[in-house]
Length: 104
Image (cartoon, rainbow, N blue to C red):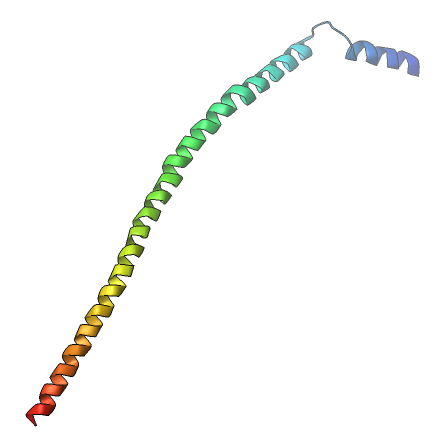
């Protein structure tokens, strides 16, 4: 049975080995793929997502805001018109009332 120092030496040789093994080749491939995915594919995906998010969410929301903003402005005008019509109707009602009173 190997002693502790033999095991330590064996572990050091394995960890510090510069010889390529199938495991080290696969590990390098994984690291290379990870770097490519992170630096190239992820950036492209984020750009596509940003464009898609903008087209599907931001622009329709902006369009809806613009449309509603126009409605608010028109509602303000509508309120003014309603007040003018209400005033005119009251004037007409009062005029009709005065005419009825004068006929009696």
